[in-house]
Amino acid sequence: MNMVAEGLRKFSTLQKLLANGGLAGLFGFVAILYPQYRDLMLILIASSISAASADTISSELGSLYGRRFFNIMTFRPDRRGENGVVSLEGFAFGLLGSCLVAITYGLTEKFNLSTLLIIVVAGSIGNLVDSVLGATLERKGQLKNDSVNFLNTVGAAVVAFMVMQF
Image (cartoon, rainbow, N blue to C red; front, side):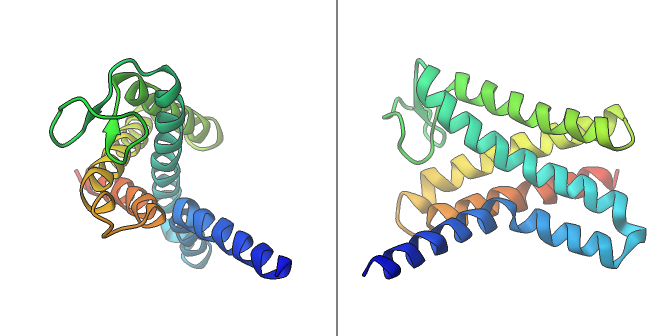
């Protein structure tokens, strides 16, 4: 029985890893296979990691330091820790997390202020996507947390890609 429990724990860890980093891994693979898209893929990687980081940091530190919690869909007060419940402090921490990922990207790749802004904006919007999905589909049991986290990273990558087209 212990082996089954250990196997389930490892599977759960793998699910969380893929939910938060699977898209970044896929973009990395594309960058290797198609070097002509390397720069684009690196920005999409940074944007998706920015969103995953913003989500984790905003929920953890927002729960600790948030003062007023509200449902992102109704803006009505709601209970800390519930899906789709946010605080201004949590959003600020998430924004900081996105900034840290963007700065790291800027230190390792070509420093470009517009690219850093794309990563921060995409990560922050991805974080908001996570909250909206949490308040709607996850609360109703239609999505699980790992699916919401994956869609958070997809949302950030889509935003980054769309902004880069202008």
